[in-house]
Image 1 (cartoon, rainbow, N blue to C red):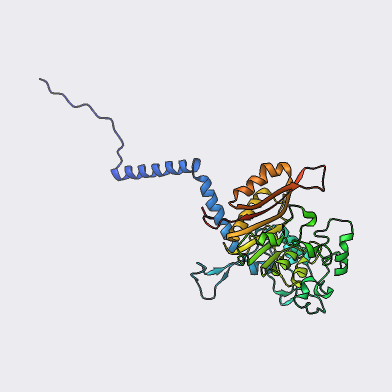
Image 2 (cartoon, rainbow, N blue to C red; image 1 turned 60 degrees about the horizontal axis):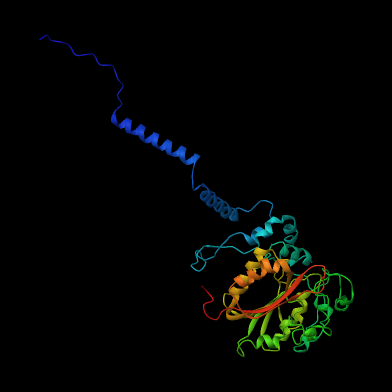
Amino acid sequence: MGSHSPKAKKPSICLPSHLFFLFLLLSTNLLTFFLSTTYNPCSFAHEKIETKTRIALSLDEPEEDLPLEFVTFAYGQKLPFGFNKRFDSDTMYSPVGRACSFYKKDLRKYMNYKVNGSCPNDESLAQKLLLKGCEPLPRRRCRPAAAPAADDPVPYPACQWTTPPDTSVVWNAYSCKNYTCLVNRRLAKGSDDCKDCFDLQGREPVRWREREGKHPLEFTIDEVVAMKKPGTIRIGLDIGGGAGTFAVRMREKNVTIVTTSMNFNAPFNNFIASRGVIPLYITISQRLPFFDNTLDIVHSMHVISNWIPTKLFQFLLYDIYRVLRPGGIFWLDHFFCRLDQWQDMYKPLIESIGFTTLKWIEGRKPDKPQIIEIYFSAVLEKPLNNSWY
């Protein structure tokens, strides 16, 4: 056997083990980073979180072009005694409508005043902001315009059916400059809201006391109140209550009604208050300022109709359902829309809310024969039992 020498091995590069593992770790991390930036099934959720964070930050970092008085009121103020358990925060934010900052030009005008001085006489501007969604309006540190020589109101109960003095109103925002003009407006051409509401000697005294023309859509207060046990209708709300006559008539039944109204070319809120009932100056878009399950009755005539966007209409009906107590009633008075809208949209929507029906009447709207429109009146009850399911 002969001897032989081993084959020569090719030179190789060997990494120490700890460097090899370091290289592997870096490679894995780089690969993970690459994949996470190119494809992420949760990226939409992350976007929403980042958006919310930016919105939250913006509350503490006001935009430069917002009025200083608006920023002073609306942005966070530290509580004097620090963290408060009831607030679950150490900061107080004053509520303002989300849309206020959308209309900066109008907002600057509204918030332009001398602190501790007189507010501008700007009712029209304020109402325009409300209707655009700047609701609630920001508070102001000034004194509102008022009549220079106001009189005391007419005493109760005479005030309920007496035209109030002209000196109770600041008339700048309206085409009429006194109540005589408003009373006579019923005779003029035009489409002003509630044209005959201010004539307390005309149709107002018979509203809800008797049926006009004995039409089945006309419900009287007596027949609606009689649908419930005596004394169980005590407090409620009238949405878009015109001159406050519904609240006045209900007060005669020992029922307290708060009336919402806007001032469309007339001092509706002043007029309602002058009659000894409570006005509430909010739009139809505002969340009703009552706690859940508290009111005995909610009424609305003409205001809740097909001019409201459908989704907001649905939100409104659920808000009415929310504030009514179990067993409370919603009196929808003369809702109107086209027949096809009623069949395809509004009737199914109203039926879906959860009310039970105490009375339900549909009828043809006669004033536009070229369009098939319907009126609808109903008394709907929030179930006394199992209203939450």
